[in-house]
Length: 435
Ligand code: CTP
Image 1 (cartoon, rainbow, N blue to C red):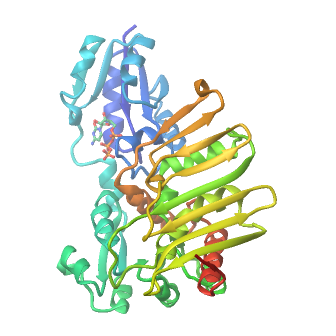
Image 2 (cartoon, helix red, strand yellow):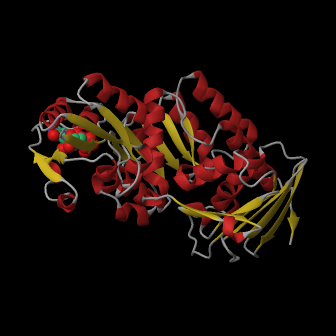
Image 3 (cartoon, rainbow, N blue to C red):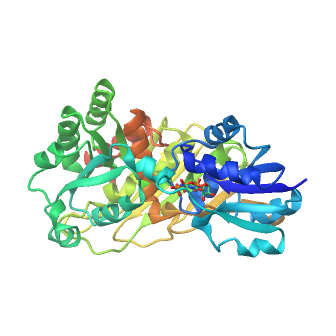
């Protein structure tokens, strides 16, 4: 019996895929189809896949061409599979010509001509693109413009900024002369203006039926934050908090390990985010710039129902908040965040539990790596998950998916967003201890 194997993502199954499978099947007596797992695709930069692994497997099964379907989960697995299943022929389309010649050592390699004029990418791109407008002065805008290129189905429609530095670095044709004009040319907006403008801008966008991705904090007032989330819900729109850390696979997996009890009961979460970068007239104060990110693991892990908190802060002679430490007291746990752009510290995250602890090295908010550590170091485990583009492209993919389905797919829910607003509201109202 001649055994043939082939691999692919098979997103939105099309005639190119089916023709490939038919010819692969005809090469032998038994066809195994390897379908790529979501994580594996993400790690090789394929982030736009629309269908879940199960949907893609079901589509292959429904063709009746595969005698067996397996999941491709890691780099190098092809060699393992060829040995394990005693494969005679490995085949893929000519778009991979030459790239699998190394498998000749294990079986015969055949490249089949690719069907012209169709691909999953093209089908995805044909869907109406979401036009995303941008408003704000942050340098982050440049990164968003760059990163959106990796996201199928999204285009930048216009940018309204007062910052000359941003204007100089983005394509001129994208520059708009008012927020209103950006709104009029967009289906959704990314708001990264200073936090005091968020409320008005988010509200205006929602009232004009635009989905909103807003840099955290969405507002520095609990009542305004609730009102905006209420408005989005009422109008069937997506209002999403933009906290890049929440979209990193490592951070999401770390949360799952904590929830699954890998380090026992959690008694303490300690997060530090500091930088000594130069600020300008458009810079956010350091509690708004760093506070939401630092609070994210605290609220994600311990919840938002803390008993009380103490905010220590240091202002310089010009009224700039250089450093803030917030201690949270929960019924059975404590947490602390340290943030600032006038004091430097180790930017790490430590989650302490009864069985062990999780350590995320600096800069933990751009996390692709963490360790679960135990009393006996032999039991320690290290985890690595690829993080491309600081998480921005994943965030955009999730936002696009959310806008498409009109449902938020993200770890930042409105309860966490409201809790972040509450802390900032207390901070702004002077509920702090000066140091
Ligand atoms: N394939 C083909 N003809 C096409 C598209 C794909 O023969 N027009 C083959 C590929 O060569 C591969 C298999 O189908 O052997 C699975 O390809 P996959 O990467 O899943 O499909 P694409 O349409 O190329 O996906 P994308 O556009 O996301 O790269």
